[in-house]
Length: 221
Length: 219
Image (tube, rainbow over all chains, first blue to last red; front, side, top):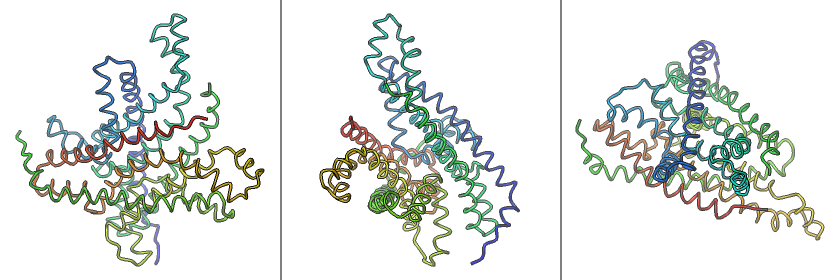
């Protein structure tokens, strides 16, 4: 068995553009899902009573459906319902955001609820409003405790962008499939893709571990 | 715009078979990945340094790769390197098992490490041998802590089985998308697929929450 890795150098630009799309998709869906997740978690915790069950239903539904199904549905079925056709990248961004925001919301909720109830009572007894309580007492402590979980969510986000290849987003996975199909050298191409993904993800997971060790003491109370 | 939902009912047998394959894949992967995960965790904790390094490298590699890439890789590389003509189902199962074993190994290792050192010291001070202390003191407590994490790995795995559809394993996602392209009832079939996953996954997610509340560890 002989390997010829020149296929990688021949398609270096094509594959590099895939890495760019992977990073862009991961970055954007990371930011969007964090924002949406925060909003959903705060609605679930402090929103009007009729909204809370809806927030719970949304979170639990997204935890129950595979991300592949969410992506395929957003790309193929949503345009039929809404009448708006989207490029694959936008569909992937929407699908990933909807999916990951549910996980972000759970992280935010767990973080906020991990602050002992006595602190809430103390803050209210001191005359703080609920908004002040959340902003001054709960979130500063909770955010520290959420950091490691957000770190692992980031690595999940990068991994999930590979699934967007199914709806033809030209990220690294998709570009690798194309090159592998054209060159008939799937082993070289997919092994290379493995190295690239590992190179992207390993620093993230390592970084999460390091941050966790650094900040763990801040979260203790 | 008209929808024809009867297409879902017409293909109920295929959908049911796909669902069965999804469940079967989940169960079989877990059956393989729990003992293998334990073995890898044991190697990482108690084996000689070179073996330990190999086990660590395996776990770190597979925890840092997208599963869909592992699936493709297994599909193209396993037949060439092993010379076996594996069926798509067996290939998908191998990819899932490789992935989940790495996660389980990390779960078991963390579970055992979470038991304070003082307990092993106390057990050996009471005259137990190290294996005895592990078997009688550490492992029973570790298992309790590991269970909630295994449960959420189970739900992730159930969802991740959909990824083997890319190598034509006829599980629920693949079957639904096949029917979609044969009948052109895109919205109906994709919605039915999502609904079936939801019906199966929602109770599992709720069960995981319950297990996590039930087995919460307070020291």
